[in-house]
Length: 422
Ligand SMILES: C[S@@+](CC[C@H](N)C(=O)[O-])C[C@H]1O[C@@H](n2cnc3c(N)ncnc32)[C@H](O)[C@@H]1O
Image (tube, rainbow, N blue to C red):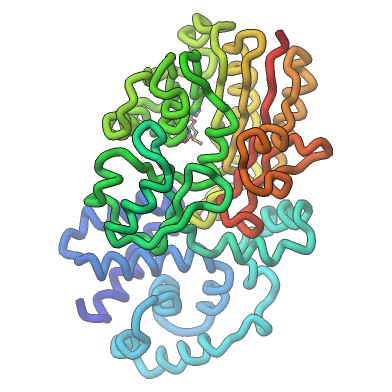
């Protein structure tokens, strides 16, 4: 495609994404479906351009205040990922001069918000938590995430899968913390890799693997994955149960649970029972009250721990949406807790970095549920033989799991664990 047309396509797509009516990846996918003539290289260029702008929005919008043409065209030029000479062949002389001046700007010329590229409310909340580490955190949130796999222990051991993947030409290493994880170099397509086709591995961020491990589900138990979605953690829990017992995968989104079905088929699991519920107080949940050994609440949240993958979330979330999520999280956690039998384990998790969705929700739960004893995550990670467990925990009693992209190279996750008193 001629660079002029490519810049025009980028500008159109950026304008659509920046309405922030839908997640950016959904808007990009729809655009590609509606523009079938775009080839793989053009799609990669458009997608890279859009995600760079979402990551570096404040800096690029500041640079785009000068220049000519529409704001979307200026952003498309500034974020163009390909060859500079190829790009310049599509520009006017004035645009070329403006681009050279813009590219000469260094970090020292930028104001603080143009360096961290976070909305002010979020920058304030994160700085309050990590203090001097804030710049490092902000930078890590703007770097793309690696591609991690989880080994399906039902089918193979990690060493065997690593050897198989290397044989298939992939560059990979064990993940530093999860005993089940493999980190790939780059973003290779997995659709034809035998280990993937045969269900020996699933795509799952290392942090998500640790959350499923914290539930520590055992053979023959009754387990509920309360917010199962498309079942990333369900599959890990089902394998830990060695395909025995009964694992209910609940969610209010039947559409998401449908996406679990092909993954279940590949995984070889037959102990999973998907259950679409209307809301967290659904009658089907009441019928299971007091009967369940372990419950995972992987709560709906702001997703602000996943900015490496979903940079649009920092522009789509607000203090008001976060407060609404915290109310829903509290309602879901209270309802899910009723499922547990005496001695049962409850795990609450989010992929948010904000205390409001994490410690604050859990401290309130602890105050109102004196029939639940907190289980410090540090001891649980030690028992699971996770490397460097102390660095993964926070709180006075190391009771919380706290994963940070800049410290651990994982998405930002939080978890708390309780045991229902016998
Ligand atoms: C963080 S996602 C779950 C991700 C999933 N556990 C995984 O590992 O792939 C949160 C899920 O909660 C679901 N959800 C939202 N409100 C809910 C409710 N009231 N009760 C149960 N699930 C709910 C959403 O549909 C969404 O799939």
